[in-house]
Image (cartoon, rainbow, N blue to C red; front, side):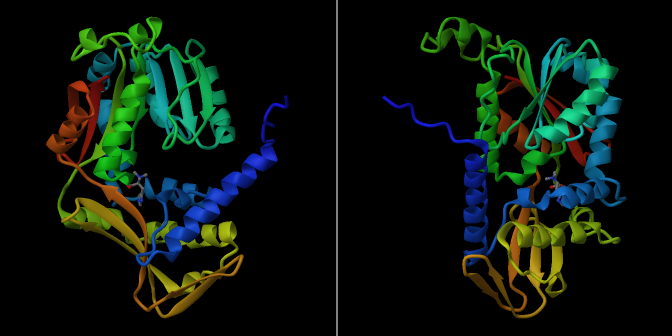
Length: 342
Ligand code: AVJ
């Protein structure tokens, strides 16, 4: 009997392209048009985001860095030395690397969509920290968190900085936290097979696993508005660049001159929203006969960035089953770093 054929790389890439096409066009055709924030990050988009992090108005990056620096020893104590540090969305790995001296992980696992980019970043780190084992994993952790068996189940500490969790709705965030907790696993369970009695485990943490996460906090609207609509217009460029990316992905004909950036805090929903707004009536076309008419002033919702209070995020962690939660904030309480035991 014939084995089902393994799809070759090209076939797999086809499927991914088809999925992108389907997802993007469905979003554009919806009565309230929207796109996933992941399409903001083509090569130029990633560079523009790096520039955003340098803006005076964009406080999250530097505030989080301040907290990690200021409380590095307390954080290391909560996390525990010798961990397997699993970096979700590692990018250039700079944030994690700053923690290495205090955290002293035994193994660093960098996860991001583009493995190629990761390998360059991790290559440099290996030289700098020869005692830390390092692994690169190219995967989309938003859909899949199953780690290869070569990654020890003992002492898995997930690292999810930058308030990236803000792109999820609170319900999606809860489900994601539950999946992280599941991926932390319990050494113990694993050894005895999955179907053993879990009652002895309830409430007890014997995994030595946990989560170190950065959360942007609710604050006065003018501060949030400025952070997502800066004077220099870098965030506007970051948002508009999405149309350029979509033009390439869909063979579309968005004219950037016909659109403007909107970025503001919506206090009813505890989220910052980014939109692209049509300056005038416009018809956009893309390949395979796709077409959408936008009225003047009609918007495409391009990103939501949810904000939490210290208490509301602690409650979410508890709902997801985490315990022993430690938090650290800057003096203004604009940003929070949390550690929770799996
Ligand atoms: C990368 C999702 C944390 O929401 O602040 C920055 C992205 N968008 N400016 C954020 C972003 C506009 C950022 N996250």
